[in-house]
Image 1 (cartoon, rainbow, N blue to C red):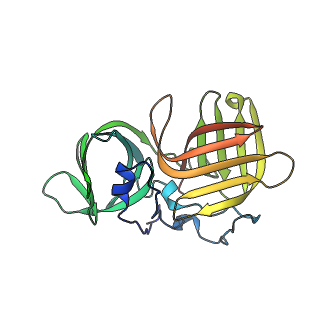
Image 2: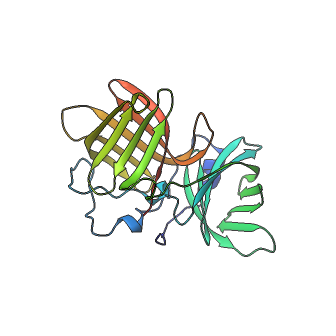
Length: 249
């Protein structure tokens, strides 16, 4: 897996404490997905799959962790790389480089820091401190498990999945708990790397659908397992919510 390069702001304090704050500072598209691909533009159909914001991917990490924090009743998702921490709150995503400490692991970007030891962690911001406890851990999906898939999303009740092809602007949509499976061409209507937001829609008039992806902490509503993206699927006049993640090569 390649090494990723990011630009992350010191807006985490706003995102962690104020629900009305907009997130920003999500990194540019994942460099491992950039080779030999032209950049896609909003509302433009292309013959290759578009680049996706790297905040939708685990980076070098092999697993995601869910944290329950007090006193602000925050729910965070983390992915630990070799020397960096990717952090998702309910309002955005950030990366913190590792800092040298005497014990435990500390990651810091300006006035924002995340320190953990075992299943306990502390998050410090200019507005105060959060005390967190590890709630869940899950392995990140891999290309070996999902060959040719760049992004995978799912939701429950009723069960559905969306898998974006790694090479072409097509997605596989499974609905009715997997009883109905179809491959649909899509086009990009929104691609906002800074906000980690992507909106896809049908590329032809045959069937309307829209898939909205946002980089933010997401938790499966049945298992409570953590994911780095919230996903909304609109199709056949219905809207479904779920979680997703980018799958790095």
